[in-house]
Length: 95
Image 1 (cartoon, rainbow, N blue to C red):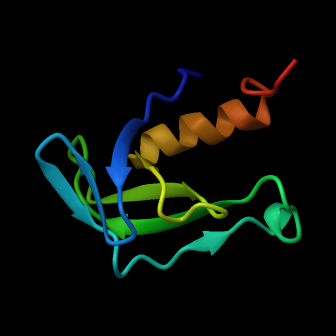
Image 2: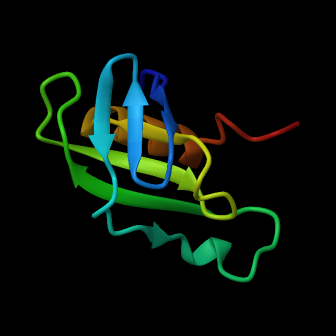
């Protein structure tokens, strides 16, 4: 499985942008991982939003739930599948 290569977007709570493209995230419905509930150190949130990246009709946005004003990663559905497969395979585990 190819390794995911998500584009990092510089974001604010309302928008996410890469270069001259801006994505409005103000209506995004963010979902928290059940693993992150009560965990003081790690919590991610994801939202599936309408948007276009590499021809897709929707994208998956991911942010740090403890820092929702920080950067947001944007994945196409194919990138998301590759990323989550890598997580499940331990590809990103720390030594």
